[in-house]
Length: 241
Image (cartoon, rainbow, N blue to C red; front, top):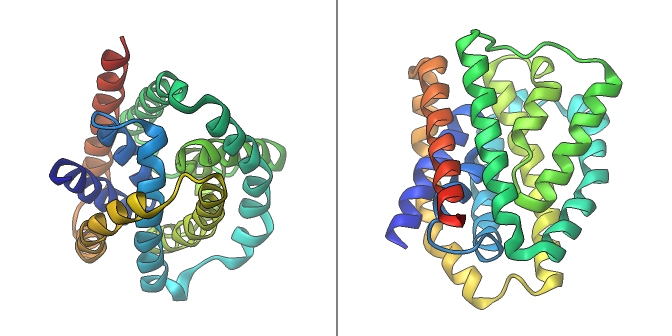
């Protein structure tokens, strides 16, 4: 639990600053200790605490129209497919997840290298397809953030609006994910007990994240997160091999 709490703090601090990526980073690090099928139901309730705190801090700049009209509907359609994949594959998701983590890390590193900090606006069809895939990934792994940023990041305004709007999105989607886990029996007394032990790490990430977001330059921080993601993915691949 000490290692997992440290992983959650580091990962959720990254999300508190960047607006996304906390769950995929926590899964990549925490999966060194326990299966994804056990870890994800533990992390989702903790992420609700993080998202609620971030949404409250930025409640005055949330882009409700973009969230309600474009992002949320497309992702809600894709989520059941991800939930079905999670239910059917179980532990077999580890290699797929490891590959996804590495690909996302490489994608982020390419953006940093080319200094593409702001994502351009995309055609509605392309953006809708990416958001749908983001819903699928979120249903399976609880972490569709990178695809959401790729699809609609350029429309989310300044950094504070970006973080607050995404926080509301994760809050809503993870409530759906949580309900699915409860119905499937993946969440019970043991998992909720583990989640409760991790809440202090999430609260500390919220408190520190707001200060870090205002002071740390974006590019060095994104580089650190991308490298950590890549390392976690490689470790997962090596463990699977």
